Image (tube, rainbow, N blue to C red; front, side, top):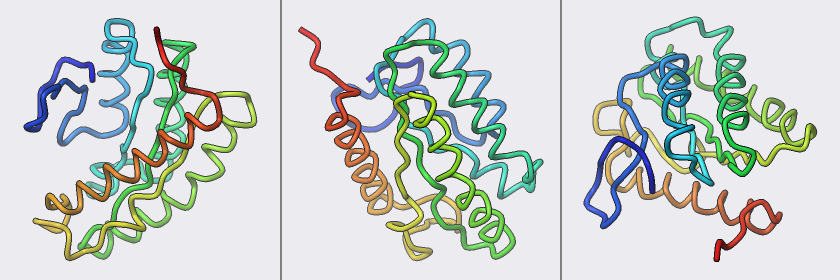
Amino acid sequence: MVGSQKGGNMSDPDNEGYNGLIITEIDAKGNIAMPIYQPNIVAIVAGTNDMKRDVDVADAPNRLKNLIQDVLDASSETVVVVSTLHPNADPPSEERILAFNAALPDLVQSFVDAGYPVVLVDSHAVIAIGDLVDGTHPNDAGYARMGKVFYDGIQEAYKKGWIFDIE
């Protein structure tokens, strides 16, 4: 685990996660962090704040595509595991999330078709509205399920030969 932030109660809590940022702000943070930390795996869940705040929703998939491309351009050895957005209790936000999520399979496939190691995982399928503490953010059980989804995505990337043991 690498990054300038610390979170959680695990033995290695380093990360580059930020609360409250929209996709372009996450991209800007990543452009600073990637050359410094050079992670071999980047887990991305970005867009919730864009959907909740109704920020340039139509262009959100393209902005996510730019974020993923910037991560891949920063290191030829980085695997990206990107997740769909989990549900939101606010109906207009959920409608925007569903439309955003629907664009992700083709977006990720465009990277795979171009030879990039990118995996899509589905957090929307494993988190329910009842798992949200405030209608937007998951409770511990929801985050645990999200973590399992990312773990499975990492395992998928490993089976494809995109992740290798470093001696």
